[in-house]
Image 1: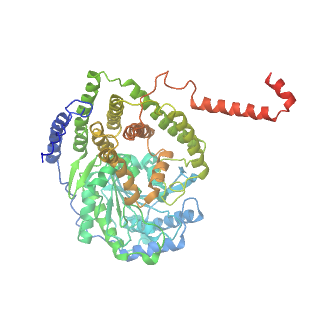
Image 2: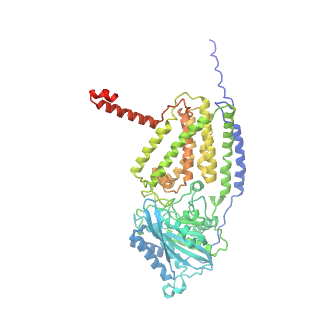
Image 3: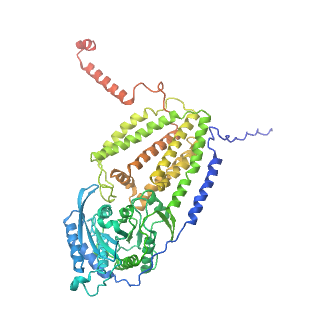
Amino acid sequence: MSPAPLRPARQRPRRASLERPLSARAYRGTWLLVALPLLVAAFTVARPAPIPPSELPPAFDGESAAAVAAELAQKYPDRSAGTAGAKGAVDWLLGQLRPYGFRPRVERFTADVPGRGPTELANVVATAPGRSSSAIVVMAHRDNTAIDEGANDNASGTAALLQLARSYANPAAGSATPSNVTRARPAHTIVFLSTDGGVLGGAGARWFALHSPTADHILAVINLDAIAGRRLPRLEFAGDHPRSPSAALVATAAARLRDETGELPLRPGWLRQLVDLGFPFSFYEQAPLVGSGISAVTLTSAGDRPPLAFGDTAARLDVQRLGEIGRASQRLLSSLDESGELAQSTSAYVYLDNRLVRGWTLELVLITALLPFFAAVVDLFALCLRRRIPLAPAFRSYRSRIAFWLWLLVVFEALGLFGLWPRGDPLPPPPEASAGTNWPVAGVCIFAALAAVGWLVARDRLLPRRAVAAEDDLAGQVAALLVLAVLSLIVLALNPFALLFLLPAVHAWLWLPQSRRGSLAHWATILVGYAGVALLFASFAFRLGLGADAIWYVASLAAIGYVPFAALLVGAAFAAAAAQLAAIGAGRYVPYPSRRERPPLGPLRRLLRRLITARRSRRTSELPHDDEDAALA
């Protein structure tokens, strides 16, 4: 029996061929450049030193603060903006402050709250003058969601603010000042700020940062929010711009909490900090202050978002936790006041345990990570030029796709102008409110109908009408990758940290020309490219507890202008590039047809012609037989 003939070994496609167009050697070699910024980042890792503690022992009384919180929560269980309870809470707070020699002022303003319209709000400001005009602010929001008493969120923070204010009572108040109150002459001016609209996206804190005359002289802000819960103490310091508060402030706040509880407080992990720099967002009130360049940190016993108000009653206050965070706040305030050196400027950084990595080094790493992609894309572009593969039809095909996504963006903005979407100041709406999760059905239906019209028009130039050569597929992929290269430069100019969401796509989709179209590896590569976008939405879905409503919530942020319009344009261009690559993988891609390949009439004109023809046929069929010849004549 003769041996079976040997099968010829499958030869690997040669380099720079249509089956293997990407130069993997150039791509891998460029990654060596990333080692330099990584080395720089390693050598710039720093351990911020906390400000030394004050020698004065804290006089914060947790049981007394709990009693004050219970009084506010039970007397005014509904303190939501614009209600009688909100006005009563203002009068109650003024009555609590005046006996200690303060002359509080009420700063009234109007905020255009998404989903509610113009809303009258009021901040209460009490000042303890110091030897310096530079101010340290202790802040707590006064309002609640009215679902329950709001004892923890945030009568507890308001009660702690009052307890801290008593330590700086004016001795001129005479007998009205209790004898057990510790009178302190501060080195800095101490401002006690009770904000309104805290549960409405931090409206009071935002107005204070933008309009209050006190905001020009602030060294630091201590925000107290839901500090009587049963969870471990936590620090929040994300801003609504890619900034972070003074590292010395965060380190000192952590040290003072450790002094009281025996362990370091919780704080966001490094990945969440990167996400918050790439997409600046926080439910807590330090966000608008940090975004305005004011160092602010929130002390809380809640999680990544303020607690739900169900069951938030005075009976469930944790007096021990309230006392611990209250005393830590007093120690922190004393440390800041006695410090002669306090870095008040904001910057960007990421904490790794007790060390931090400077933001500029992270930006350098993210920028350098683009270089391998740029080198490979330029090589692919040069390959198309050498092989005389035309790219113009591929770019025209992309033009049709981006026209559809821009049409969606125009329709979305137009429906907002007509009042079908929630509009207002760029304030993060409460996730429980209609502005965050429950969109109007009429607006969604109109948007879907207009989107369908736009798709019918766009797809007419994207339908396959002939067989597509391998050169056409490569041209379509290279055109999409060149668009991604331009988008990465635009993102770099807008917010370098947002490259975190784009890098998985550019590096994964770069290998699509190298994979077999329609194969499992091809589709897996496309899915990997969406990892950055998935990371963004997962942070809202899981970290902030929004679940499937995360998509709607992010859409509401776009509707109210919280997301910049330039970012929406980048998102539309990214979606068009992704759609072109997906069409190539599904075998549905064609380059833009030439004039002789496409029909003489567009889809709308063809539809209109069919309707007119059908109407004439129906009218002709309804005429009497004797008049048919006359009608035809």
